[in-house]
Amino acid sequence: MAAHLFAAIDVGSFELEMGIYETTSRNGLREIDHLRHVISLGRDTYHTGKISYHLVDEMCQVLEEFAQVMKSYQVEDYRAYATSAMREAKNSQIILEQIRVRTGLTVQIISNSEQRLLTYKALAVADDEFDRNIRKGTAILDVGFGSMQISLFDEKLLVSTENLPLGVLRIGELLKNVSSTAEGTRRIIGEMVESELSNYQKMYLEERRIKHVIGTGENIMYLFRYEDGGKPL
Image (tube, rainbow, N blue to C red; front, side, top):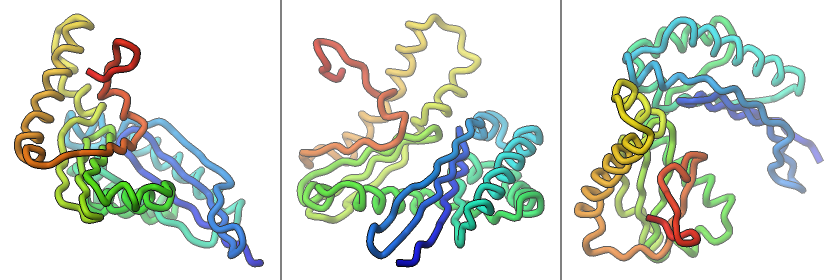
């Protein structure tokens, strides 16, 4: 029973992550290590349009450490993907070359569509009920630091998908220079979210019934407030 080791690296808007996975014919896929480093690449991109040199330097140092860990595990193959922060940065190609030269890793910037497809595949593998749920109206909310994607499935088909500028980090950058109290800031964020979701509802949900909602991303709870024992507002 030969075991194969594979690494997956995510260069995200707020953190760098790497998972080391073992695959065998008997046990399938098993995660054997997971590394994470918080680095706010999106803060630079969403504010200035570029990723600053000191963050590029920090990112390369972390990715070089990831490469050393891969070597220690004798990883046979890897994939390294970058998402919205790198995708929107004007100096992204220079950064990718810096990463290649300094770490030996090849990072691929994936489009929003490719990123969502990977999310759908991961859900289908992880959730035994996924195939059954998308037979009837299902909304998938993928909440990231840069944006939120809403995808509607019905009759097992993807009927619509929309990317909304409601990422936690992006909203934070938009409000960075707004002078307000904590309560005022919450109200402004609420109005921003309500406005985007209201427009989305008018465009896509007037004649469609949603029976299931699947939330993904560590920031999903930022979009909900609770009162009366858990009723979402």
